[in-house]
Each structure stands twice: as structure tokens, then as C-alpha cells.
Image (cartoon, rainbow, N blue to C red):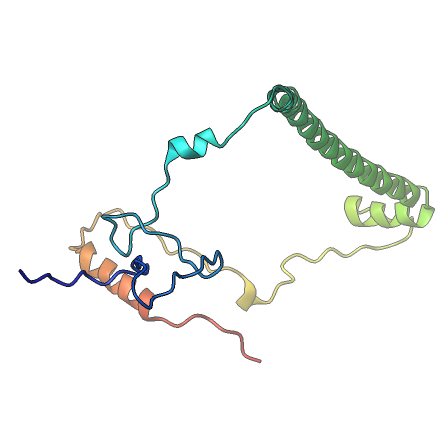
Length: 188
């Protein structure tokens, strides 16, 4: 009976010592890892969890140190959150103090201006229209250019007129015009 040839494998087939054949020497660097049977080429290597777990060895010292790390994290996390919250509040209060100091500085400068007799005289003339005895003050109303004045509104009619309007085409035209318009740029 004829034997069928074995399918090609990535690992070399074990050779049996025979006539004229020397036994190959084991080399740890050149020997590829043996493949598990029944695996396809693209599959990830399978890990035996029991074998991996049996390799873990915990001593009493390791368990105590691990529990101390967990306990330390359990104690420090809320404290760290409180610290960060307090630092944020302190920063907000410092900003508030800075704003208050700026306002105080502005008020002191305003008070110094009001101590100046020339400033008081100027403010009395501008705000209250005070004058010195013997002075004549002219107040000019309507000193604007007639083209700058706002237009008067046309009288409103008493009759109500209804205009037929279809809002959908107008909306569509507006959306298309907006989408096709270029962005506004300033001239150099």
C-alpha cells in the first residue's frame, strides 16, 4: 500500500537515526517554538491559564505588602481629592482678592482725582452745566448732520392685508445661498 506524503509543517520533522544520518544537536536559539496541533496559521497562541497560575508564588511578605499598597490607596485617594478641591477653592479666593485689590486701586485713583480742584470744576461744568459768574453758556440741540438722523417711521395703516406666502421655497433658497456663499475676507 502506498503512503501519502505528510503536509508541510513549519517545525522540522523529527528524524530517526538511521544509516549515515547523524543526530542533530539541540540549539536553543535556532529552534522555533513547537506549534500546537489543530491551530490555523493566523490564530493567536493559546495560553494555559492553569499553567500560568501555577507559576505564581505568593509569600506572606508579598501578601502583606500588597494589602498595605491597597490600604494606602484606599486611605490616600479621598484625602487627595479633598486636597485638590481645597487648592481649587484657594485659587478662586486668591483671584477674588486680586479683583478686589484692583477695584480698591481704581477707587483710590478716583478719590485722588476728586481731590484735584480742576477735575471738580470740569465735572461740574460737564455733568451739571455749572458756570462761573459772568460766563455765558450756549447749549446746542440738534447738532447732528440731517443725513445722520434716523428716519421717521411711516404711518401704520389701519387695514390688515394678507399676503400669500410659501415659506418653504424661501427657506430652501436661503439655505442654498448660505451654503454656496464664500467666507468673508478682509481686503489687505
